[in-house]
Image (tube, rainbow, N blue to C red):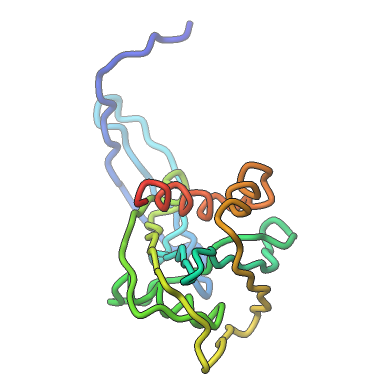
Length: 187
């Protein structure tokens, strides 16, 4: 018999143990054993321990949004999204966003501001994704500085086109859609 919903807050489970299963270049796979505080029931749960991420909603002086398309191994396809990447240890998310913007697109902005943050998937990830708005982004003479496995198509697109692409799932990356959500709230 199914229980009925209540407005009572569920309890937080207690960590009994935590161990590293596999260390990768950008994250670690870990196993935690949890115990329910009331029933004593225990279970093993797996999560990805990752540094925080940042994505950048960058606007050109003409009001276009800068989008990137790159191959994604998880989905085995090309993906339209906003530029972004990992926030380095001790790095400010806005500085990380501006760095990633230039590295991936060749565009630079004098400054940016944090417009939101969220947990990408709290069921399996322990990090945050920060969303930075960078306005008046222009091509920088130094160009791009891609990582070893990056090959990126860069386009500046009218905002209406980006919104249409989001509605049609041409932009299907959840973090890019989250970036659009915070961008709309910041307007």
